[in-house]
Image 1: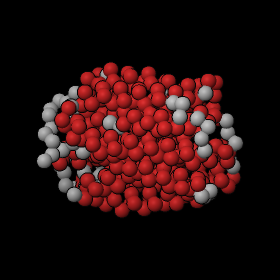
Image 2: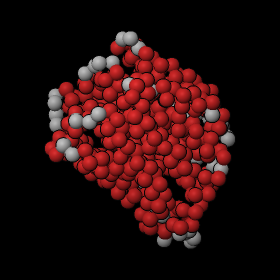
Image 3: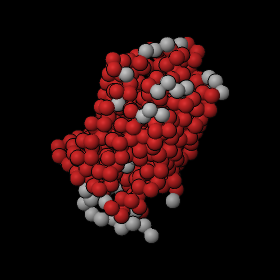
Length: 399
């Protein structure tokens, strides 16, 4: 169906944009002549923008409707992505790069909520476990972005041209895809309002959205998503630099190892739906926690590149299902699914706010590899909180 395929496209281009930036972090670092802690502060711009985008997503949906809000958000992130490349390769301006990353984060954060809301709605419409596969498409986008980034780094392509090209591609694809997203008055689509009798105003929808924060189940699901998102986001922010600075490898090798991570994430999400239908959310999340902790320890302590790659695979598999399962668990209560999904996404994205500066500051003092022990602890806590995501109803596996 067109709606489902459109959401797949949105997930893909979101992953493509994020990984394109991440794969060029070492190049941007060198172009701006930054220390490790300064890289952490630079990435804080992306994190802060993401939180602003997450907070604004519900308002944007209410004010503009899903189609226009999604295009607007991706336009903001694409503009920021292009500016990051220009700031690093042309002007050498860290303040401009910081401001541009705020735009990138805002657009990506708001888009993340919107596409997960749409994904949960498609999942309910089709009656199958779809969210892990949607997030696999995001991971597939990160694989493509990482490979493009590695190729660009290996061929010494200017980061400005690279990121600008990705920005144009993402915006064009999103503009086409949203045409297949249905108009729904519940999300504030004005074109659909004439077909309904009662349409709550945006202020009432905002009050309803804020009410979900009093639900303890949302907070517990948020603990799971926080730990898993921290593990996923920290790989995006620091894995390439950990390989380069911690293990003495080249920039191209760092980008390729990040590609291994996102490939493992993609595999975990592709097979995640059938595995979840077979074993249930709680056992799968606990297994993911164990895999993630083991993988992180290998990445930190590996004496050889091959063990580093094995650890990266386990890390990626362990982090693969936390966020999509959290989104599905939040959407189990269909009465206010959009607000619940938004709230859990905000909790998870808190990792993107605190992760980069914390790991950067710790890494500057003790080394980036040692700083990764913080993620080990959070992955373990996510495993302990797994029962909060238990299914309310059983959805049979698709035939």
